[in-house]
Image (cartoon, rainbow, N blue to C red; front, side, top):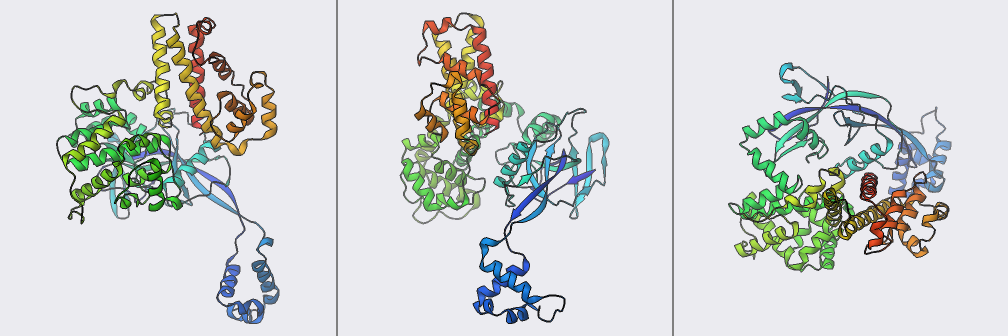
Length: 580
């Protein structure tokens, strides 16, 4: 049994081994850099240009002059010519090998890429009846629970799209970067290994799973944790005195991404107010960043730039510059920077309290003092209960998470409703407005079950919701795939009868990923994907011919036809998001 174990694990927690396939990926890497001799000569000339015109002295300093096997004059003449004429440099080609990892339970390719891994650990024993394996690493002994895959999991070899996505996500989360412009090949050979992971209890009393390659918890492995480690989690909850009923209640009411926010808001009423309120904001900002897949170039992550973004959104900035200094890690300040950079629509709602960032900065100071010790910074006073309640009530109102007794929870929220119908990964990529619009379409379909006659409201909710979300995700798709757009393909697509009347000005905007119409987005999408027909989008456009539906519109459509259209459009939205 080969075990891949990295050192980046926390103290404590439960060790588990996740079954994976390792694939070798061969890449051709071209570059126009200098070799070692050329680099040395260039450095010498940079220090003293004299050597650029004296080959004899240059050969002497390089130790080439007394080597009878080398024509140093001819060699150095070529080297100097290349250094002095960089445009004549030839591209060099290098073969590079990487390894990618696919977990064997659901077949998902993990966001882990390695190069030249040659160090695996063999097990040193264990208890087969308990599915436990013993192994040693760096003088430390580990006992890990093996999570065995299904007998017939039907795992397919990863596609190139999955490989490139793994590379992109790896670069986002790790210091070791890989070029995303490599000429990669589809992996062919696989080898079974076990990835050493760890289940840990975080400060919010929630179990997460880490993979050892970075300190952050692995969202990709969470489904394995929740669906295949039930008995293990039950034992861990008992050991840590965690109320499983209460934990499940949070998930039912708020969804997996918001249960921690609710937990911290409830703890706020009892103890350590600044710490739990800070945790609630940190987790909510993390939720917004993750849901929208926000990233930010490190070169832009500068305090003055982030401060400008905040002021442009309408926040009042006093002595809050320290709030904008962050390490681009997984913490409140880095999440806030990404939200400000992208001018996030939800964060924009916090501007109804222009002093919000000043209060958040005070909360940050008080939390650090309480958590790490030390005195209050000069000229700063601890927050009073009135200021803390302003922040708490603001977060509750904007997040729609209300923890006061007797008040309605989010159990009927769009996110909760859609979890049974749409993959969680898709929901995480949709905006709150789109989630609610989709939820309305499902509620409208429910209303059709008992009454086969369509009403104007039901028809309108379904047509409007599908149109709105379809339009939004197609625009995002075009923004990502601009490089694949060609004018000749657009002209060919415009000859399609149902798209022939789409306005030229709308197509120009759609081509740039700007606000346009669904018809214009369909033209650009089909120019990129010429093997599709989008007849269900055509049907949706016909249904939505009038902004406000009429009785005549309803008479043209049966309930069954509307349900089939709804199913097709939802499947299309899911497909699109997986390619964004």
